[in-house]
Image (cartoon, rainbow, N blue to C red):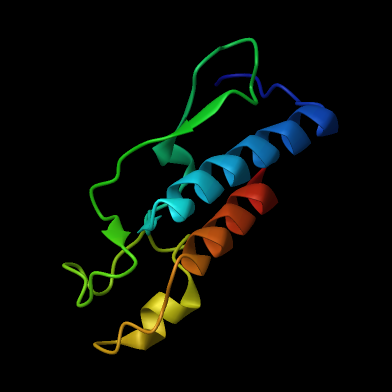
Length: 108
């Protein structure tokens, strides 16, 4: 069994800040990720845990391209409630990524 390494709170704050900045960038380009989870976040530097990159845009969609190719998508436990209850209406937007980022913050 691998020993758990505690991470300082300051490092976690910087990690989430960089994640939110990355999301803000893709949202400014009109894209929502829709499958944000820890497995879709990579570190660019092992020594700097806050150097993150968002990856795996397989379920992403452009905000203005409705209907979305995949109406309900995401990973259970990280998917925003509005995606689950929207059904075929697809009344959700980039805020679904912010919900997923909040779940990741809680886990960290």
